[in-house]
Image (cartoon, rainbow, N blue to C red; front, side, top):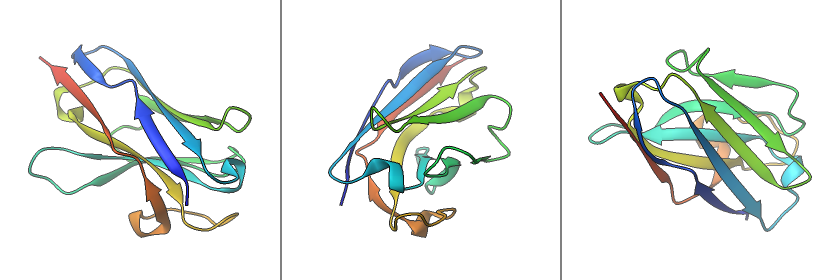
Length: 125
């Protein structure tokens, strides 16, 4: 099991930027795909972005493509989500997640075995 702690959320005006960070500990971070998900009030948790264990491949939800960038630092055991041109519909609790199996592609929520506690992002008009 891996422990994940998100930070960097907050209140921002539409069009602004935030950078979320996720610190991982407890196992070999560099062996696992990582992802960001979000959950808005009254809605199901949804996929935002994933990055492979090597950092060589990323995938994004259509709603954030071109605005958000996921990255990782396997030396620092960190994963990041740079969010630009934020919109009110991006308001949600954002969760960091780690893949359940090493060197295995994690694409769906069910593929992720460890979750952080979440960080709130609020985008005002």
